[in-house]
Length: 437
Ligand code: SAH
Ligand code: SF4
Ligand code: F3S
Image (cartoon, rainbow, N blue to C red; front, top):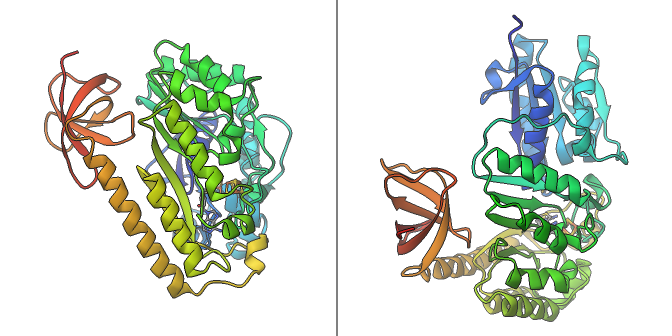
């Protein structure tokens, strides 16, 4: 019997990469590869990379440097680079790190098996095309193995927005949606394998048009799958939040009351220079409408501080917007110059200024996050249990608001959805007791 070859995949960046890595592992499974948790015993190493900020891209090269010894010891080891750095830098990666055998861009993963086959005897393979076909349909079918209770499902890819700071429109290409019937089929398959919560993914997921009623139509369709208990989606652009999707937050019981809706900045001058195509006021009005539909909606966002020409006054406008919204969670970053994007050409804010603003913004966001989490004490939530906790007899899951909740109880299994009364709030999670079902 032939022994299985081992594949080590390291994933960077967003949830879409997490989903892509799963699908690549499955595709290579069809070629006789099983996944391993360590690069040391691997026959193939695949880095699924992110190009969003300078640091993210640098990490890839330093990681590759660490594999030099492995490749020297085992020349037949194949090393591949996938994801957004692969798309952005292409053949340059092999010039900088000649031990790389394979470079494959995010839209060409269905060709991974055939590209890998081409790398025999030291030959190199490169594919960074944007083909027309749906890469996921052309990947080998997902095996029927049992899965955990939560899963990602990519429904939309690419971005047509061209924010002045962002590489995504260049690395992922134009907006493309997968047809609703394929998404529904994949969701049914996931549910049969034990999944109870699906997070629909897209770089601009609410620009989804694979259903004639958009993302709201798809969500309503998926709601009909009996054993699917929860639906989430991410990431959304404020300008694609249509009336139907706002209404779905009030009407669709399975759609969870948590929304990641990045705004990036609170100053209209900066929003305009970022090419975000909306004002701070419009964003706040939108949240008002969402909260009218679903009063307990928890908001999440992304922020960039130190965008070119951001003054202290502009930054204050971001702080004011955050104060007005009260975020349940958020991600904030220092602006990072990305070659080829319009903002990289503009006068830059000094690094120490960026550091200072990031600290102040994060202090405010952490305070809000904690306040919203603490406000859950005494309330009843529903928890989808995912795994056992560190203490014996403890189970951990997520509430509808995406808070981690620990419960000490017998007889709960991963995948159970149970009512829980919250009793206390710690730094990163809540503790509660099971209510009778
Ligand atoms: N499509 C999503 C997110 C894309 S990237 C959206 O439009 O919201 C995730 C986050 O990375 C962005 O929301 C932004 O906050 C941050 N980001 C993108 N480019 C960046 C850059 N050049 N420097 C710093 N942060 C950046
Ligand atoms: Fe990047 Fe803007 Fe597109 Fe989001 S909407 S992926 S930030 S260009
Ligand atoms: Fe990074 Fe590409 Fe996602 S740049 S954030 S991996 S779309």
